[in-house]
Length: 505
Ligand SMILES: *[C@@H]1O[C@H](CO)[C@@H](O)[C@H](O)[C@H]1NC(C)=O
Ligand SMILES: *[C@@H]1O[C@H](CO)[C@@H](O)[C@H](O)[C@H]1NC(C)=O
Ligand SMILES: *[C@@H]1O[C@H](CO)[C@@H](O)[C@H](O)[C@H]1NC(C)=O
Ligand SMILES: *[C@@H]1O[C@H](CO)[C@@H](O)[C@H](O)[C@H]1NC(C)=O
Ligand SMILES: *[C@@H]1O[C@H](CO)[C@@H](O)[C@H](O)[C@H]1NC(C)=O
Ligand SMILES: *[C@@H]1O[C@H](CO)[C@@H](O)[C@H](O)[C@H]1NC(C)=O
Ligand SMILES: *[C@@H]1O[C@H](CO)[C@@H](O)[C@H](O)[C@H]1NC(C)=O
Ligand SMILES: *[C@@H]1O[C@H](CO)[C@@H](O)[C@H](O)[C@H]1NC(C)=O
Ligand SMILES: *[C@@H]1O[C@H](CO)[C@@H](O)[C@H](O)[C@H]1NC(C)=O
Image 1: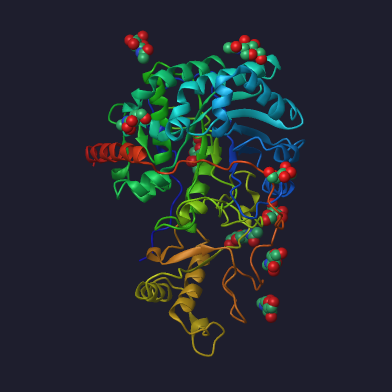
Image 2: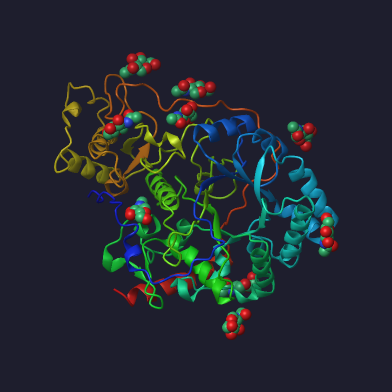
């Protein structure tokens, strides 16, 4: 009934099995973790409050979806590295006019550097898939912006690139067979030439969550979440014999292979968006979001690289800092954030021992409770398991004892689940109980019933910053929503995966 606790030891098993690899000198050695700051919130914190949260969490890299003046001013003199964006709705003007581009740079970049440490400009967002009409001018827009930076003598410190949906890469599984959708060659080839000649990098959005959700079971959840797979389930690329232990690496390697198919072998990759929603769909849970983002951060900061390029930095921006209640679409679309607008964490990442970013991970204030909408019979079965084979001390639930009231299955199960979760050191996968349990940051203790992990403290996480009226930040994130086109891509991906794994099981 209990899902086996995740064991984290094997991420680098494949390092022992590698073939000799080429390592180009333009690749960075140190990977960083950043966050995307979407602003589609009804109570968007003020720029000062956002920066206070970044500082408290020791977040040193951010990506904005625009070049909001107030935000760039608040980021001044903080040392935080900032990627700013040309929003899609300004792309046409810039791509059609050198003067418009120079103006944009003057207004949004020159007025902020060097106080604000702008390190990159993302030109549009997923233009090929979300705004294909602008594709023909995409590379000119990048060149015009770059020329203006050259004129201002800033081109070596501010890189110009454009984030892509990974759906422009076809036949991603196995990665060695991947190639860019050929309809985009007239854009992609000049684009890669531009990135190479300016020593910039490919920006790629990587969403194992969507790959998993659309795969109808072909992609194992553990493979998407960076959890260890049994050796017979590990994916092996038959052409390269590289072993893949997670979807993220496979997608990044597919992009490397797609570039090398076009003879570009020395363009590094930065993942501009990756994450996992914590609410809304069957696998959009606090536990899964925590597991994905915790494992992603550990994976990136360890400079593990990918099987094709081990040890090569793949800096990554987590999507995203805040839950965005105003984002259109399903509930899960609104729940990609690490934090609530108050600055309270949605969940506490399990990052112990992996550096200082997102520093609040070392607090122990998470609890495991029964899911409100779970099936009552399954909750009862899980409760029986916890108090029996799970060896939880359930005596506080007996009549007359502090946690007897309220005498409901859900209330009793929450106590038992939390006791088990804390007994297991809050390890990955120990708050699952066949999907009827979930991690929370609010202390479920009530009256004299003190839940394990609470230490008798009341309330939840401290409130952090308070809310503020929203500022005029213009656009917010345009991350990949699933389109028909993406589904076609996924079908090919899934078919490929099935054939690929079947060949090796
Ligand atoms: C980090 O990398 C080292 C060696 O490069 C490896 O031994 C270790 O298992 C890795 N840890 C994680 C979490 O990937
Ligand atoms: C664009 O303007 C820059 C100066 O800002 C100039 O150096 C460059 O040659 C121009 N490029 C084109 C294609 O007109
Ligand atoms: C390749 O891109 C074209 C143009 O966007 C699109 O019509 C086509 O469906 C794509 N091919 C695949 C296999 O996704
Ligand atoms: C890549 O290089 C090979 C060998 O030089 C050549 O045959 C091939 O046509 C090139 N491919 C592209 C897309 O330029
Ligand atoms: C968190 O829990 C661990 C083990 O339960 C304990 O060693 C550590 O001191 C706790 N940390 C904090 C900040 O309470
Ligand atoms: C929790 O707070 C309530 C009211 O705020 C108080 O009555 C109760 O005694 C507190 N419990 C503990 C354990 O501090
Ligand atoms: C958090 O802040 C809100 C609004 O300021 C307040 O109503 C609430 O009581 C606070 N909660 C805690 C736990 O301090
Ligand atoms: C944890 O986050 C809160 C805001 O939520 C912040 O005030 C506090 O300083 C952080 N603690 C650490 C150790 O960074
Ligand atoms: C915000 O937008 C409104 C309406 O567009 C404008 O009147 C106001 O001056 C703007 N505020 C700031 C701080 O830019």
